[in-house]
Image (cartoon, rainbow, N blue to C red; front, side, top):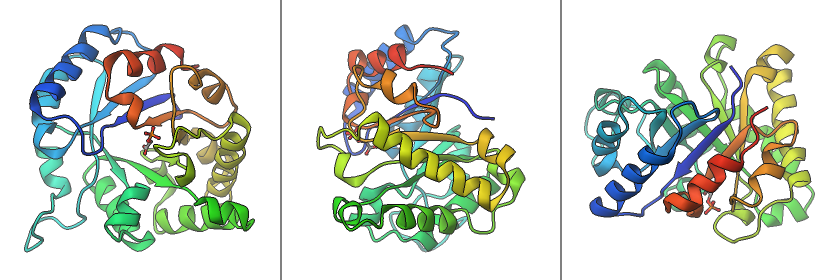
Length: 253
Ligand code: PGA
């Protein structure tokens, strides 16, 4: 079902003590009856600690990536079964940094999405255009293509467990937030694409997040938009006060 989600993508930040302090701080401050779904995505080594510290709280734990295979000769990789084994319930798939620096493609994204669903992990699938693509006027076809390829082979039932995040590459870590109108335009394009691939009810039930310099001061305008169901937050998810400001100010529709 469609819900408001605030997900913190820690990227390659926080060693153990900082991770522990941040999680403990969030655990003490996120209200038990918080209306949005709150997710944190620390680096792999601290996932078990995150799962342990958030037990019995409304905070969910996500991995930032995974492989699609069960096990085998894939040095440096982590499988979906391993994430499930330690109690993780979400996984970010196809972040633009993975696509840019680690050669992830729409095809590997699709394999990972299918593997996540097969293991009952909720994939948070990222898509987004570069500034160049936006300026060339090919943003819409690019986004629609990414969505179509990421979701290839998924059933309507699968879509109940899929979250999509629109993250314009030009707005990630740059301090340049897409305006609420720009973010809404693309989140609406994504929802229409889901409706075209499945049906309107499926599209209406899909949570579509915006990511790219989300902060406490812009989250209300973003989440107040019809097709934006929350935020995938990088920099502002690293400090308890900053992340709490986003959770507190998000509009739950
Ligand atoms: P940012 O990152 O909030 O630091 O821009 C967002 C993301 O990459 O998920």
